[in-house]
Length: 166
Image 1 (cartoon, rainbow, N blue to C red):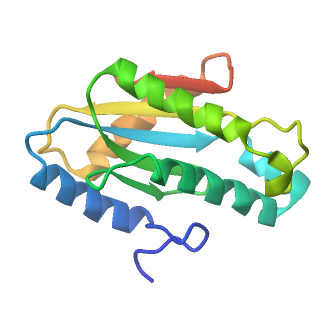
Image 2 (cartoon, rainbow, N blue to C red):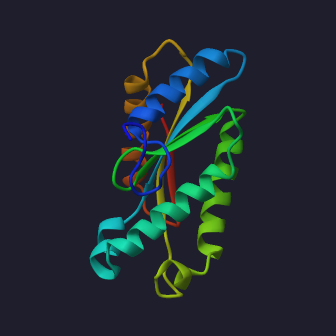
């Protein structure tokens, strides 16, 4: 129970720290990036449609991301509406393409199946930190991804607002 998220039944923040550190240690030949994915306006969604619908959206996003990952990548819900995703890093463009794919799949979903109006649109804000120093602890890595997320939230939006840590 200490490693399990009560909404998604996936890993929680504690599990993610452990798993991500293990992956980074064991996969020294691969480059990685940490992505913090925030579902915009989840509080408004919860207030309007109820927490069960909000939980449906959280589960949908979690499973969508999980199904895109390989065995040496990880995802967990780490806060109310935030997911941490550790992915192999090839290029910024590869990350951008992956994020666009997630947004496309989210909004191709039948929103009514999640308990939403059929025209409801889910948008995301995302921060990305390309891990250059695998010796950094996960808290420092996550802080840098959150700094990028805060930059992304300051931009005017589309369905996907994202920024890379500079």
